[in-house]
Length: 597
Figure (cartoon, rainbow, N blue to C red):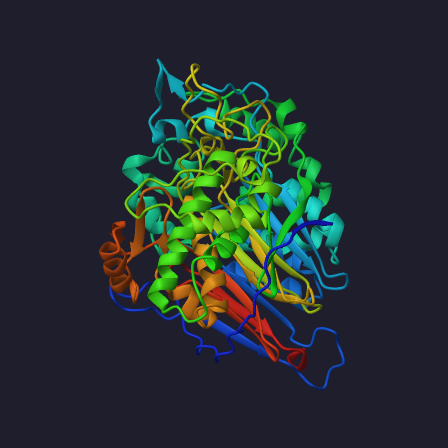
């Protein structure tokens, strides 16, 4: 089942431009230039009578992980099988972004019944967590002090997420999907520029080179790994082997869990995480949130995710533009829609098992129409709305204004299998290399800094306040879009901290309403409008023009040369699949047609 909210249906123009030829796409272009996007296209094989004639496609954040997904798909695996294989490899080759020590969200489309499912593997706070644990003497701890404290580590949810989704959808044996990562960890891999750049560039801010385990692995001989170095991780291989052979419980008990607790409870600033906290962890199957937009349905992850923002932004946007609006007016409408949706998200979203998130009211057509009819003046600070007052039903909860800061340190990938099943997956350790604490071959998350860390006893709690055993709110927004027949239309998502909803929405609006190809939508400048300032990526065309237009319209604009998106998108045309990987990171796309098999 999924929540389904009704909205005004408008006509849809579906972009059908030819895909851009494939290129490496692993390095951003110089400022002012548009880099090539790694793309692939799979055409219909008219000789097959399959309900899904396109074959498979995987758009993943690292070439090793893309190859792992393709290996599993070639064996007849479900998209979920490939997703697990891809992520276990990402945890090895891209540990700065995600891994076994973190968690994430998976949205799954099952082609045979046209249903969308959501699996929540978000980390949880220990039972001993307190609302003021990131405060000291009435003041908030500095971010890096909080991030690398044991207090920041939540119970990792990735392995439980694997198990929950595999039980529901997996076609290959559980142990089989771990083999690509086990093999690569034992045999070794080449360190990429992304990992190496973080190891050297962020060294002054992190204790990664001081904690036992992480120091020896990432800084052998006291020096950071360099791009091109060859690296093995037999400890990671051993952990995966135990999980593959013994099941997910091997991670949540015994030696692996003991290693996690030891790392969390180590100085400085130890946390309260216990073996009981780890043993009690459960991933959760939740209803996906789906809302109509034009002739499409946008389906994403419910809170604690911010996936519902995709529905909010798209429908508020439609109240601010016409079909004939020029592109810059549409960009301005995108900015205004973001400002309103972020303000509501920041105020109302939290762990749905701990707070009442008025999701149905926030997605109500009348409320979204009201928001679009009352945009915030360009130079003003956006404020949240009150859907209960607008709709005349119920009373909205009163919360403290949100203080959550959510840095980038995440990964996203999109996969479609041979049967037309799809996954949109966003996984994270929160910030770069998470808490920097090492256990059993992987870094542990600092996910609990995604709670609102400021607490004032004289104010109401924030919706996203620290609570025992709660899941912190997340900006991750893995999204699947369906057409009017509930058939697969698009798989999209991105890493990027608080900017994730903006990055993801850009691809949906860009492809559907701005008539961009997948490559063009991914490469279009990132525009983030959370709070008073609008951040515009001027290092991508036409970013400078966008910034100038918004400044003249009265917005507070902050220019940047690069944004930390990692969009991976698959689009279904009538006769082909079109996929793209963000050139701002190291992703690739692999595909195989039925006639190739």
